Amino acid sequence: MQYRKHEPWLYLAPALVMLLAVFGYPFVRLVILSLQRTQAGVPAFVGLTNYQLLFRDDVFLQAVRNNLKLLLTVPVTVGLALVLAVFLFERIMGWRLYRMTLFLPYLLPITAVGLVFSYIFQLSGVLNDLLEAIGAGVLAQDWLGSTTLALPTVMFVIIWKEVGFGVVLFLARLMSVEEELFDAARVDGANWWQLQRHVTIPQLATVIEFFTVISIITVLSWVFGYVFVMTGGGPGNATMVTELYVYLMGFRYNQMNMASAVSVLLLLVTGVFIFLELRLRERSDLGLTS
Amino acid sequence: MRSARRRAQALSGSLLRQLVVIFFTVLALFPLYFMLVSSLKSKADYLENKFNLPPHPIIDNFLTAFAGEKFLIRFANSTILTVGSVALSLLIACLAAYAFARMQFPGKRTLFNLMLSLMVIPPVVMVVPLFVTMVRLGLVNTYQGAILIYIGLLLPFSVYMMTNFFQTIPREIVEAARIDGCSSFGVFTRILMPLSAPAVITLTVVNSLWVWNELLIALIFLQRDEMKTLMVGIASMRSRIYVDIPATMAGLLVATIPIVVLYLFGQRYFIRGLIGGAVK
Image (cartoon, rainbow over all chains, first blue to last red; front, side, top):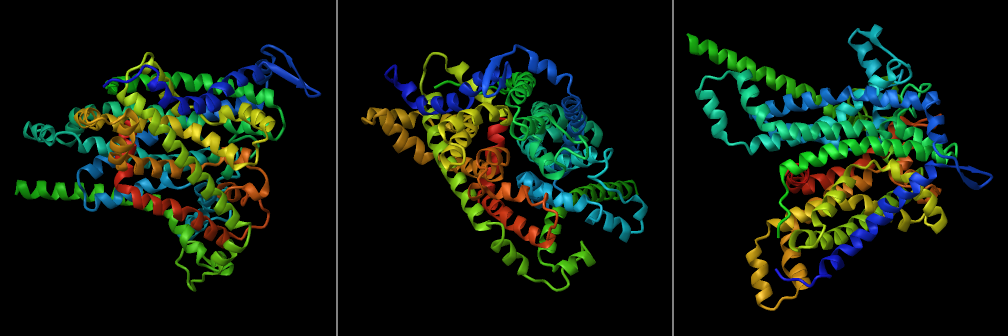
């Protein structure tokens, strides 16, 4: 189709202006802020001092460690989603209804979910009452108030919420696989496990990769809502994560320069995974031809 | 004999599957169930037994929720932000997607990939520099300021999805229109857009869910009490020393219902759209 040369840019302009305003300019500003220190309202260039201070800050290091621990949720989320998707795909009765209910947690606001779960997990909460009722009262714990249990409890909620997206993704891909492929394997005498290993998993490979990368990015840099609502980073710093650290530094302790330094680091880490993700997308090949 | 045994095996296998799926479904639904039953109990009934059905269902909690905490103002704020940013981002995204899907220009592929990569940038990263800038521009505690940020955050995914969709519209239709004297903008308004209803619905649902549920940006850029959103209001409920849990649950339920309704309305498109957006 013929267009005048400047025409594409006319259509792109509003989007580009917005993206430059919300991403481009802040990125530059962020890097500058992270290299400065403001004293009495006057910013001064201090090089990498903020970064050096960060790595001496126990709270920051704890936050990084916690983000890394959160990575443990990824294999659980992916595995669980896979099992549930395969079971639903085998058309058990009412699979459509199950798909919808399993997806529901993914839709609900983290804020609301977090608040509900904190009432479920608190010392006088539902879970402990339930344990009491079935005669397992000895197992009752202060799930969010204990330094050892708080992070695992948050991890449970993250898995609870994120699994549904995986189920829907996997199930959709499975349903687009040629039925003959499964039939052929069955005719060849493949049992259930062989069927999964040689047909289902290979067919799902790219989607599994995609969901894994997305889950990793999520637990490294999108868990603010969970900790902010459920624990506020506590008890102590037991559930402190880098995002919450940025928020507290920047907006509670007014240390914008330190917050910027953490943001730059977070951006670099995410960048690695963005690169991975882009390569996956490239492989799934979005043909940009007109 | 053997086939009978195999049938028994298959039956127990499918029974096991069913049980596993039911277990996780119950787990997925439990917090919702808890929200619902608690919101219908009096405080005394709640403390008596937290997980049974309400022995004497009441609606007082909903009245309390609506009366307190500037609930209606927050509801209105969330609605204004959602409608404003979703509508504007959709418009801007469609224009850009038209260029990406139907026109050739140097650097297209690079620009497109660059934009895609913005999709997973954690918002927290931009919050500090944006705040510093917005303070200077006097945009903190305004709808415009927050909507501006939301549009930027919604754009990458929206452009990606609309580009995908425009590419599925047969070229012949567009070319025939051009021969009949349709301008390039005419192609956009009279052919591409009217055919895009499914994609537009998907995007509207996905983006509305996201803005409605968003906490971090709202928390930082809308701090003044009368500007707060529903989610910010909810997030601050827990820190209260004295908490009326049944009333809180009623409030949560009302804050969540628009999302569930929107989802049910767009469900058919929603799942397909998510997949189209995620893995083509």
